[in-house]
Image (cartoon, rainbow, N blue to C red; front, side, top):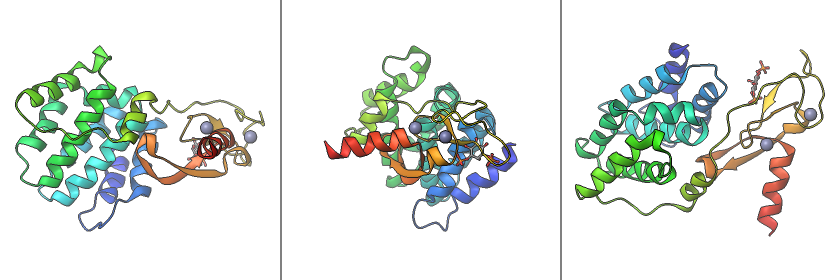
Amino acid sequence: MASKFQKILEQATDSTLVEPNWEGIIACTDMIRSGEVPAKPSLQAIRKRLQHENPHVVNHTLLVLDACVKNCGHKVHAEVATREFMEDFKNLVTENKYDEVKNKSLEMLQCWATAFANKPEYKMVVDTHNLMKLAGFDFPSLKEADAMFMAQVAPEWADGPECYRCRSIFTVFTRKHHCRACGQIFCDKCSSREMALPQFGIEKEVRVCETCYEKKVAEIKE
Ligand SMILES: O=P(O)(O)O[C@@H]1[C@H](O)[C@H](OP(=O)(O)O)[C@@H](O)[C@H](O)[C@H]1O
Ligand SMILES: [Zn+2]
Ligand SMILES: [Zn+2]
């Protein structure tokens, strides 16, 4: 499994990419979020990729990591909030010589530490942030989308025999699909819309259900 994830991760973080490979990034988060690959080996693959000597690879990997933290919930948070992961992540700021890598790492740590401020199970992230602040590292101010992330973390994908909205039973012809916003399971008819989810760091349009789509349209009209 991890090898399939490794392949997708390498495509999503290829050194020749001149802009984010959102298909690849979403494919990584979907594999973890759907449970197709276990979080632990996937985050170890990400952690290893963050040590790559090419700064472009590291920057693309940081985008994958940020999307995983914002979309895959506790199973990823638990892997990030470990001493080993935080030690490596801190080194991206203290050891990496590329400013783009340093700044992106500081921005991500700031967002996570803020989102995890009241979650003792992720104390390692908050402590790392505080220690680096005390050491004089200059953290950027939180982006609005990151503040939204603090309010709502993408829920785990639901499973079930029928569409959450119209209750039609899944068959070989009525396939299962998931809404990237609410994580519920739907038939194609009830989840044929697509939209970006900035609150989860997703800038590419992804599949969402009718309800989440209509909610977003209503918000924009307000
Ligand atoms: O098409 P299938 O072989 O049934 O596989 C489904 C697709 O991968 C769906 O992706 P999508 O939500 O992007 O459509 C995913 O949400 C379902 O969990 C999978 O069962
Ligand atoms: Zn339906
Ligand atoms: Zn939804």
